[in-house]
Length: 178
Image 1 (tube, rainbow, N blue to C red):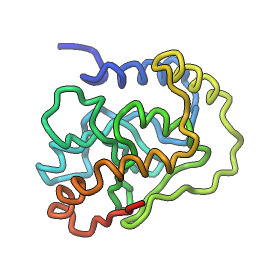
Image 2: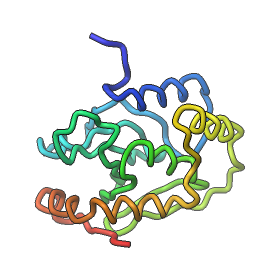
Image 3: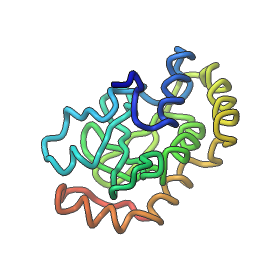
């Protein structure tokens, strides 16, 4: 038995940063119980979509998509599950997701057709600089220039395979091809 947050070293480093910072550093909802998804009832969805963070304060989730049986879950794509619907690819892997978070300057949301950004009236968090420093120190990464670039790269690599998997399970899911 381990006290680790997840079986993914990169995600455990992220949780340690979040816990140590104790401040909101980007526009997201915070970490959730790793792998626990109370919103789904289909066994295939539960087995393949592993939540790890709230995308907003309304219940939208960022999930790892276990597209295959690879052992290194840090290398699987990240999806956004909207609390009112929509399931969309967001990043090719966990490190790209970290770059994506660093690029967000407003909250993200989705519906069945699109991923979109909500207007934000708050000032940038002082902890944002801490996050960007952590990103560079831990992984040698900088934030993406544009979060849409991360989404488009994920779609270019995985959208066809994602559609083939998700559409039989969630027929209302709609792709947003770049």
